[in-house]
Length: 365
Length: 193
Image 1 (tube, each protein chain N blue to C red):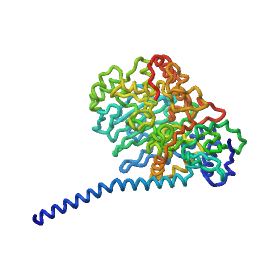
Image 2: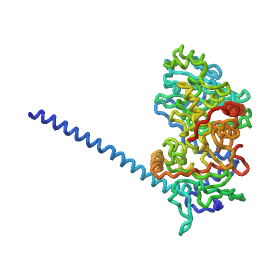
Image 3: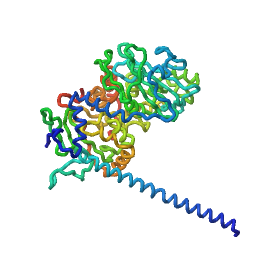
Image 4: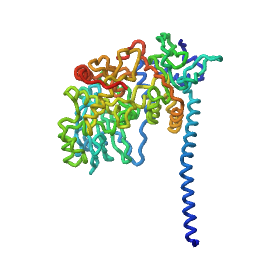
């Protein structure tokens, strides 16, 4: 039994007046755009407070310490370029990443899955589409140990990038971006992913950096107390095949920052983060959390969804189905992407179809 | 026993008594604080309309009334909804008789189970998860958007203390196992697209 209501005629009791705000916004546009609009209204209320004693965010990227004075291309001495083994999918953007430690700063790697970065650490990630610099995101560890997030939007002429509003930009017109629009994350979007992980600086870790880069950091004294075993493994991710290694790496980079066992992740049994401390155990934990395990996500509109991974059957595996979706109610990851990653999907589906069809199932809890 | 020794004994006895008082009073004080917080949370939940959508309505002798035997447990999983009727503008929203399912341009949303059931409610949610949801309009601050008609733009004006109190109260209510369906996409979309 249903009843139809017109918002303008509802009495001002219950929550009708409150509903009207949401519904009017939503009714004017497509659902996805409406949801983005709603979130952009809400997000500034969650913006990060200024930490007492820290300098305010610079208005221009050129003042953040990435480049030498007067340049927006030449890196400041001490800024290191790095690239992780497995990258986060960002709708096909080309990305570059940099990190800078404060003078004398050293990374404590004694917990190989949760490196401790010294206050003053800064990292940057630049996003390009079709060669045009669009956005450079920054994060910085402050003196009180918290992390501060910001993003800078490049001017059309590439002369500099300007601090974006804390609420982000739901659809910034950029001709070179897919569909001519680019979504700039709010600062709460930044914390949503980065602060769900064991350490907020993602991609610069014992698992994600190539062994030669790790060795170099240790020899230069920038990383200390890294367990020696970490440097002696032929591969940092445990796997039974090259396909599985690539798939677990992909899931680690794209999903593991929320789906992990660090205590900061989402409260689900699903774990997609791998461990440098014990790669075999983390592989086993990942498989046990998905193979033949009934997902909590169920909808009558999607009857084929069942187990998180149905070995041999990606089309019946919720993991792959949600990765393929870009319906905001369903998609995974829920943030930072509007286009499914076909290449990543093919990899994960191949892993489910070929490798996992012979993997023994874990019992369903 | 000289007066000096007596003085030391008395001082020690006084300190011991003070320590005993403090130690025995601390749990009571903490419990009283928690009770105050829970009571404040109950007040906020009951005056902020949470029951209007998260407790299913039933037809009572005096008309629709919240079914408190299912308080705050969200849309009943046993209530299968037929497709929502198509509405001519400016009609935009349809609500179920329980007021727990709402259809509109966003699709169909079902109100959440706010009870502390570990599998189907908020039992595994931390205070941070709860607060981030209200502050950002995303599940746990990082998942899918919370859909209309949840009045997030109103509720994110609550202070942190208010949200802490509401969370504390919601942890205290009886857990009800009720797996609320996932939202449905608008009629012209399919879930996978």
